[in-house]
Length: 450
Image 1 (tube, one colour):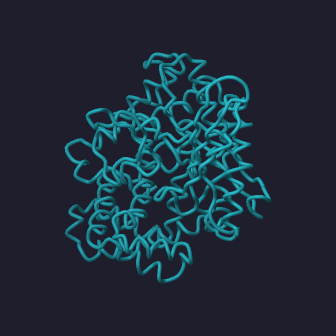
Image 2: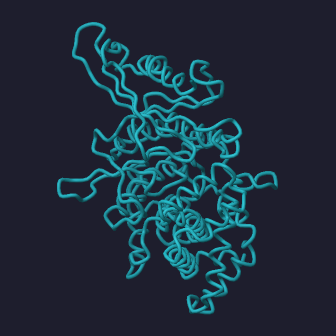
Image 3: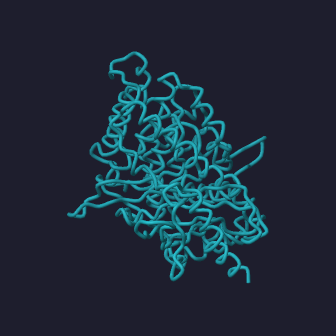
């Protein structure tokens, strides 16, 4: 059977490759009894991947103590057609690139600068990462294998499912600021060639490419959620209190209501001042938290870099803020406070990495007012990505099962459209309308006039 074939590979050949790929494991071998245990935990896999837990009981080939190593093995789902349609052949290699090249380059930057940045919890340790490989013992397809540390042993676990409080949100702001700061430091510190080399390795993940829709599944969902959003707002004009907000949302509807991927592609515009290497899919689903003895979050770790891009830092910030910051937290300065936390950490890290004072002229473009002006031109990105996902996040379990079924079988079928128009009911309608109204109030739609 196909499943048995894969299990045998994962517990034999892959194990030997893991041992051979790590200097601290090369003097070990798998124990003869209970040397390898493979499980597939529920709730860890996604639309496009399966994640296995592999526990290795290792014995030294010479003298020394035995050790146990537990890793997570991430592999692609589906046949070649599914992987092509879901862009798995772009997403998985890009994630491998982050772990294999970007993170090591950033870690070296921190070490060489002497900056007081602890990158030991930036992301999991990677034991093995391969993209575009073929192993006949595993499958007849081209595969990607990502073998990473099981960080639950260090206390990192998923946080609240959707809405986060200020402690969680601020930890996420500081951590992504540290990640973004490395791109700025390479540019400001005279290492632009290295930055360009890292960026060149990123396979472009566009919404529109060569004049055609590239991210087809996203385009389908964008159109359905726009249909739902504008239908709801049309029936409740009282939600658009000011003429200014009403005009901005009407402009969004007229210009991009039926072509949302064109708007999203516009948000991907790059420049030589503000663009950074991004996480690309920064939200609660793709981080893990560590908690202190009193239950408060004390640290956060980044995972799942599949949608890694190079672009405005607004793409990371806006998504997690609109996705995981509940609307009641936006008021009374909460929104601006979180942006300030991000910016304060960003400047601190840049200054340490390039060893310059905050007043230095080369840091002028990154002062808060100028940074905020730049962010406003791209922040609609996260609002749109958030309303794309919120119906699924707020739907009932039965609705989610139906959504996932249609997404895997045929996302273009009307059955998917019908369930996504109603999933989550009034709770979803209320949330997605608040997101867009807030974006209009903040001026994030003003760039549509240009």
